[in-house]
Image (cartoon, rainbow, N blue to C red; front, side, top):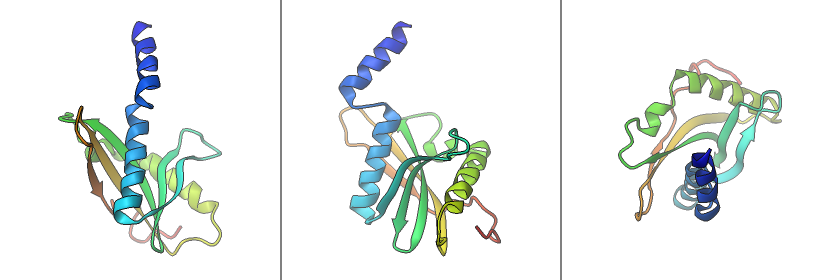
Length: 141
C-alpha cells in the first residue's frame, strides 16, 4: 500500500510514469529529429480497449505504428526484445483494427519500435528500430 502511494506521489512531481515520459520523449524525437507527423497517441481499439498503439505517425506517405519501450539505463531486457511474440500478436490486432477504420487505406504502413533509455541526470538515449517484421510479406490490409 505504501509503495503505491509513494509511486502515485512521485508521478505528481515527475510529470507521469516512466512509460508516459518515454512516449512523450519518443514523439518529440520522431517529430523533431525525423520530421514525422504525429497522428495519434495511445490509440485504443474501441472493440477491445486492451489493444493499444502508443504512437501512430506519418513518415511522408507511410503510416508508421510505433511501440515505445522506456527502460532504465542498464535494464536486463532491452526494449527491442521486450516486444515478444505475444506483444506482436496484440499489435497486429490493434493495427488491423486501426486500418479497418481508415478510408482510404494507406498504400504503405510499417511497425517501428522506439526504445528510450532513461538515466538519472542525463538526457535520455533514443534507439529507433524501423520496419520490424510484423505481418507476412503478402499481407493486404
